[in-house]
Amino acid sequence: MSTAELFDSGWSPTSWRDRVAEQQPEWPDRDALERAGAELRTLPPLVFAGEARSLTETLAAAQEGRAFLLVGGDCAESFQGFSADAIRDKLRVILQMSVVLTYGSGVPTIKVGRMAGQFTKPRSSPVEVRDEVELPSFRGDTVNDFAFDELARRPDPARLVRAYHQSAATLNLLRAFAKGGFADLSRVHAWNQEFVAASPQGRRYDVLAGEIERALRFMRACGIDLQGELALHQVDVWTAHDALLLEYEEALTRRDSITGDWYDCSAHLLWVGERTRQPRGAHVEFLAGVHNPVGVKLGASSTPDEVVALCERLNPQRRPGRLVLFSRMGADRIGESLPPLLRAVALAGHPVLWACDPMHGNTFVHASGYKTRRFDDVLRELRGFFAACEAADVPAGGVHLELTGDNVTECLGGSEEVLDEHLERRYETVCDPRLNARQSLDLAFEIAGLLRR
Image (cartoon, rainbow, N blue to C red; front, top):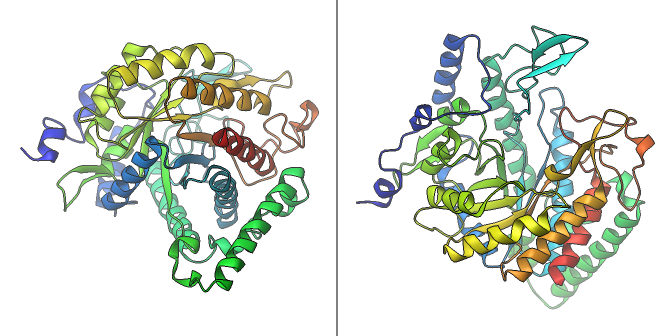
């Protein structure tokens, strides 16, 4: 039996339909949904099987401590906020952070954008009530509109196709930036945005950039041909999103012509969230059959038995680089909740990459009514994650952050502190609060210090 037959025996892209699928919209027009799915199935893949295999190999290195995973981007992409400048600025922050992390840790940084598909969000309630008016919750631009009126909140399958085309445009621009000169290491100073450059962390980054430029000049003086070193001029940027809308993911799943294996060609890496990670649920069933690297978000309620069952279901062959486990437990809970999971997975012999999402477990509603996060809580959870991994003799393999390149005021704190009264100044997210570029760079230096230790 071939690898493909062994792995996906009895599985097809529609197998999830026999399971309970949480967090799915109530589409009012099923015929329109079928038409949208049929159109998506005729469109080219957004990413390719060979790219997903390359990412799996790279993640296997991070699993052994020979690389570090950085996932960053918007909480939820929007149709209205789509622009070349926004994509460039998010990539610029990721490039800055990766330079800090690589320089500080001495290992490559795997750069993954939470973009080109991260449109949909799970909700704690299927409805939203304002002034005694009840409407469907906003589930992201792939489903409905943020405006609070009956027509806007009606789930519209045509948005699935629009999300595909915006994702294609985003990927096109990301590839152009990554391979066309923008990511050249000689431009390390140019990545420092104006509103970041004057900050303490921006000045610290500027010193680091100067050291890198001096090192490059030294290598040229020694006769080393830097033009021939593609790694100095180009980078790989991968994409990832929550595989929440299963009709969309199914429509973009294709069988690879080389290996015969199934790949979800909507992104390089797909993850299943805290609300949809049931081992026997539809989302896990779907991800069990695709050969992309996959991730699982694990909250503080996760049990060792659940996590081991997820490892068995998603990576029965124990392939290195296949599975990323993202802890998202909250700064106050990670010290007690993560160690039993680390021990259980190690005892079961599962090769996984452990990474930390320090954002989602630290969200709260401010007195002003805005959802926010404290930078200090994010940092505390990261420190707890690194401490737990060190105690378990497991590499701390990555981070997953919600961030933007814009000068927003959505998360409190940081070295140039966003104060309570600043929240309303530039609170622009349509869902969860994001780190701004200064806070992201601040965090990168802190993570680099944890990696060195």
